[in-house]
Image (cartoon, rainbow, N blue to C red):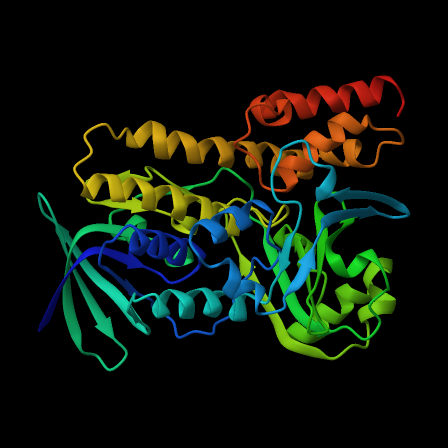
Length: 411
């Protein structure tokens, strides 16, 4: 069997893995990556948040993404019937990027991976992990290529960025349920010949179909738009027939999508993801760290997935570099777990507030305080580590308190 050695093995070539690999390469370490699929490949998470721009810039990947001409995104619009709540990232409370992109993930992820390869990080595609053995100062990972051949990779540290594959959590029994009800996403890419002029193209639109069901509308620069329905499995049971027939029936059932998409050509056939919310018992251990969706995935409603992927990849990479330089001052629990959970728990409050109606009351209030709106806007931009923002620092109580004020004042 072929045997190789490296400083860091990165499992997974998505945003978490490529951010981590690029930063560690800049730090001077030898990196190897393995990826189970062949790129380009489709995955959800097509609407980035401005916080992602910080990580792309830090990893030296920003220029490569800019060159792709992706659709620029300047905000998020929420629609309920005739009511509209529009957030412009330029109005946010936290100082940071005020725009980002909406991206077909197949092209976006391949751009990141190709750029990392050009920086000197080899990637083995169609290569799955079959075994990992941890020793005192290294690990030995057995991987299998598409042709059935195997090799062993000895590494001083492993960054698990395997996404939904969750290699280490599944291999070492670390998975735990998230506590959220089971929800389902049903989505496709549509040729968008009736795209409205103006702001609709430069932001995600989130439509309240009913309190427990919502729709995403994400326009891309290539004339294609991603349209997805998210709700409990029971909602989807009323639609019968093939996936395309069911999907078109859903499109026709909502005034915000019917005229625009009813007869449009479907480019990417309707796809289903069910029961995606999951968490883990721990985010790191001796010789490894979990990043991206290998840590936790909440819900697609506020597009937080790629932000967490990049935040975790960046933060983990910096800590791994210090570890490999024998920095004895590292506090993994404080500097990694507590840091990541701050952001995850903030978005958890917002996801819960979305589904229980608290955020509907706030977003569609007749006269919301603009200071509060700018602070909430910063959360929607991904700046969920700014503890100067009361809607971050007191995320578990601030939303409910504001909703109560709105109710009392009849707003």
